[in-house]
Length: 419
Image 1 (cartoon, one colour):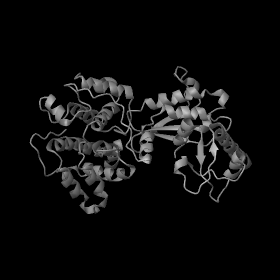
Image 2 (cartoon, one colour):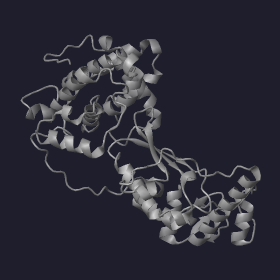
Image 3 (tube, helix red, strand yellow):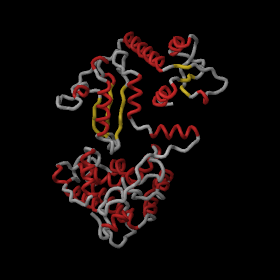
C-alpha cells in the first residue's frame, strides 16, 4: 500500500496490521522489538483479511507508528554523524525575497521551488526537505497552505513534483497528524478507485453536477461539429485559426514555444472570453506563450480527440511496425479518420511543420513538438494515457510533423484550409 493508504488505515481504524516476518531482519529488528518485544520485520502493511496464512499479526496505533518513524530518523542521523554526512542548511539564493508574498514566512526558506519545465513541457516543482528549518521555526499548517497555493497555479496543466527526502530530521519533520491532514487535503479519487478495484467492485460514481448545455458561442469542451454548426460552417475552429495565425506571425522563432506554461487564471479568463464569443487580442498580454497554451488547451478539451478514439490502438501499434514502413502506416491511419477531423489535423500539423523548420532557433524539433502534442491529439476512450503508451504516441506524432508533405499528400478534401 502507499503511504496514503497507510494513513487512511490509521484514520479509519486506529490501527495497522503488520505482516509476519521474513528471515531478513536488517535494521528494522530493533524498532520492531521496541514495539512488540520480539523479533519482527516491518515488511508490509496490509488489511487483516488479506494477510497470507499462516500469519501472526500485531496491532500498531498511530502513536506507535509515530514512534517508529522517530526511531528511524534518529538512526539515520546517527549513521550520518558517523559518516560525517549530516546535511546542513543550504544557501537559499533562490528563495523568495518578496516580503509582499502572501506566504513569505514559508516561501523565504526555499522549501518549494518552481524550477522550470521538464522535457514534456510540464512545470517542475521541487520540494526539498533539507531546506526545512526546525519545527519550532516553521508553521507546518502554513507550509501545507503554501503547497496548495503553489500547485493551484498549475492545476489546469500537467506538472511534475520532485520530492527530495534527504535532510529530513527529527528536529524538522512534520507530525504524523500533519501528514494525515495533508493527505486529506489532496484529491483522493485515485485511491477510491484503487480500493474499489482491490475489493472487486466498481469505482464510486463521480460526484459532478449535471452538465449544462453549451453556449451557442462555446469553443472549449465542445465537438468540432458543434463549433462548425454554430459558426456558419467554418471548418477550422476560430480559437485554432486565431492562435495559429498569431503564432505564425509572432512566435515561429521563439525558443521553447509550446513548452512553457502560463498562469492558470489567465488561461481560464481567455477561455471564458472565447466561450462568450468576445474578441481576444493576444497582443495585450505581452506573452507569446499564452496563445500557445490556449491552442494546446483547446485540443486537450475536445470531447473526442482530433485523431479519434478508434485510432488510439493503431497509434500504439506503431512501435511494432518496421521503421521503413512507419511513414506509410501513419499515412494510411490518418486517412481513415472523418473528413472534418482530417481537415483540422492537416491545418494543425502544417503549422507544426513550419515551427519545426525553425528548430535551429526555437529548439522545437519534430521530436520535441511530438512530446508536447502527442497526448493532446489522441487518448483512450476510457482512462488516461499510460506511461507505456507515451513512446508510440510520440513516435506517431513525430512522423506526422516531420513527414507532413508525404503523410498528407494523397487526400485533398474540398474546403481544405492551410495556415
